[in-house]
Image 1 (cartoon, helix red, strand yellow):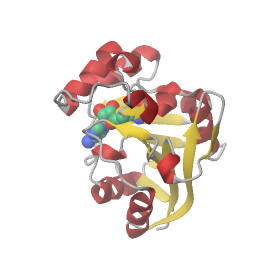
Image 2 (image 1 turned 30 degrees about the vertical axis):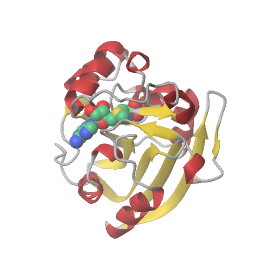
Image 3 (image 1 turned 90 degrees about the vertical axis):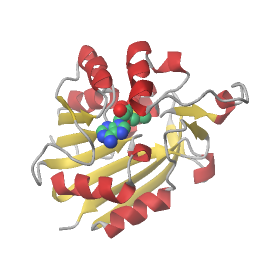
Image 4 (image 1 turned 45 degrees about the vertical axis):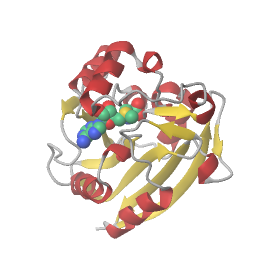
Length: 219
Ligand SMILES: C[S@@+](CC[C@H](N)C(=O)[O-])C[C@H]1O[C@@H](n2cnc3c(N)ncnc32)[C@H](O)[C@@H]1O
């Protein structure tokens, strides 16, 4: 996110500075790193979450597209498990930061106009990015590049987290409903608490760091 846990957010002054533009914000993140901006993402910060997400996918080698891959920490982890991972992001600066870390199978592109043919991928992940996108259009475009029976994994922020002003916090059921409407079978949903020691189910979405929805393309 553009995420801050609520406890951290309390330390901020009440008066907020004007939010920078989307491109400006991610250029700053790419230049300084997440920590220096005062924001973070869970998949870039927590190996536990990278492992948890990887475990939600079949162990066989998959062609995976990551939409809004940012600086590539999750994608490098997935590639280390032998998947063939491609990433797209609107921010060239974030992609360059990712390339320096070793994730270079990327393209600068808009999630709503993916530069890939139909049915190109076995799995699509949208990690901590869906809040920047119109839900139905983003899911329709992800579905187009996903093969039949392909899997889609979406993570976003739960109630324990304050998102950046540019980031819309969809509810878990919004995401699940949009997937169902687009012709997916929703087969897993979780509200998660993420720490450096574990990823575990939160009592409810309002307590969660990360909400997670996974689905299979039906036809
Ligand atoms: C909160 S960051 C998440 C990055 C990474 N997935 C992670 O979890 O660390 C959101 C990313 O989505 C990208 N993004 C926002 N809108 C986009 C769009 N329309 N198309 C592609 N990427 C977009 C941003 O540039 C940014 O890198």
